[in-house]
View 1 (cartoon, one colour):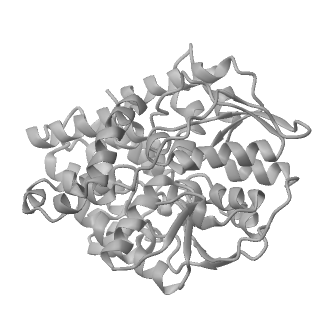
View 2: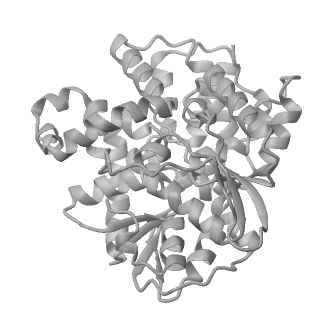
Length: 425
């Protein structure tokens, strides 16, 4: 059974620099809903206090956005702390039956691309018949907050463009790369994967997308389902090991954050530790790889005004902020505007917006207001969860704005097509 690491808890000096960066502290002003307060609770557990339901609530309310990690002058590894604490909490706290059933359903669905694929047909029919609008107005949803959140977040589902297992480089081959297809990305945002393959190929990359790959385990890891997460990590490592790739490219912030951490997560497993380190060393966000390679494909103008949103697990967890902006700055006619409070989470946070919908909604509305203030025509980010969360909040505010992944902008520029035609939503 997982334990809270005492050495990491001891690193916190309770200075309070984390407070203004923590979304839940900003919402409620409660000490126990700040990183400092949660570390105080962890210390109580280490001193012998029992983990109970009221304590677990404060750990559940944490988004795991890692803004506090960026802000902390002492270098406290809060990301590792909250993961270990949640892994310790899960087997010790008896959740209500309805909560357990909902968690089982969510983690059984959103971590399995095959199940998501089976649902696509019925969900497309549901949307095309206009039933989604009826369901969202139904008073029944108010009694099922997780289902209500799912209904509000579901993006328009278009046809899936299958990703080939092998895509040759255009022109001289500069790299051979693997591509993580993801779960939600693969089935709900397939155009992002298609754009990623086209951009990589245009920039001289041979792209390998092993059909055997499954979930990376990020959602499970961030929710304290440690064994489940590590098993998925091992399967993903195995699916890429024989491919002889120079890098493993990821276009989902949360997935990339977890995959880069496999070396630490599997350090105590003698069969997997070295393999995990080797795998993690190859993992790069797509923006990192493209900046590292440098552009060779010509760019055509994309004359739009856009705002860029830093996904937390890209900016805070991976420290990848410069590269997406650098890529977008290289697109002729593309004007990029910054969003106020860019370091504050939008409320998506994996499946946080499903299990803590009230807090997520408030954070989403706050982010939507900051996006709207830029008067941008397009919102660009590097994570599908953020796209769904901010889109839902903007719709609630009666705003219409185009949303795009960073690679969709590059794809439109390289192909000389309009961004509006790149991925209809």
